[in-house]
Length: 441
Image (cartoon, rainbow, N blue to C red; front, side, top):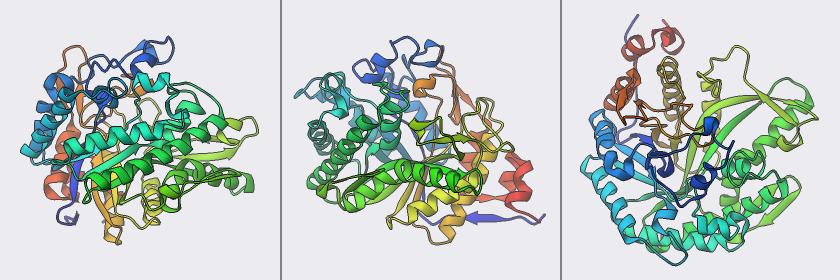
């Protein structure tokens, strides 16, 4: 077949993403460290432990690998409980540790994007009610202003809160995240406070660093009606309106909409400079009267879909196109802040990567204002309530020895980054069974 290549714009960011609790190790002062000690909370009773030992310095070798394989950016988070271990107390040594990491990124020509809240809260905040407490947005804003004032020399792009939709759903509806509640009313209160926290943080960041670019990272879940039944269509739209739309719409017009409730937060209006888009998969949704906690929707994957090794993710690149079209409607620049698949044997990941990068190029080519792509993740890390049972890393990790294991996808992604594009030769090399669908004769 004829050789083909698709190119991305000059200056496009190619990176990977990580999060503090998942890679640093020995975080002992946050809600997840406490959650891991409760029986039955984490699969197989696992814990983050030393994680990827970034707090011990192994970030250096991992970021060396990122730079050596063509990446030009990295998204990571800072840990609130390290920076503010007690109310009113700031740990300048922890802040300096993050400065050192950021200097290391600049030395490696990796452009940083920093997330200020990635699922974890300090224990002192939890004892005060966490995000159920109406004072928490102000506490968060003070922490954010401290961090930005300390790190602004190295950072321009900030994510205030990672996946507030997942945080509120998993912590207060499904109960899989701390505090493990299953109460829709409490979930709504938390959503309102998260919007307030984001808004205060947005304004605080711009006060400290006027040139900053600030956004939320939203986990877009594609909810596709399983049939043409009006009930299936209604449930899919309702789930999407709450899970996908609530936070970014609130950051546009200052209104938090949840079923029949609307709360107006004037300070939240126009508090996005970009959309952070996390996309993994697509659900089919059918009406189910027995599932009130999911708004009477039962989710499942298409029977013919390719599944990851644990069945957690279906390879659904059309859902990625849908997600980008959705993000486009807000009118802001877009960063793909997470996209990836758990795949310890690295058999599905090359195909998943090829299909999704190709869909990404299509959307860039059709004038979507997409600035960069961050693959989840650089190295295997602690996957929250799923512990170490899922391996999302381009690089594998032996948790006993801390040895990094080079998967084939490392080299595939390296070629994409270096070429700033995707070619038929790459696909023939790394996932030949995808070539006819991506570059047909």
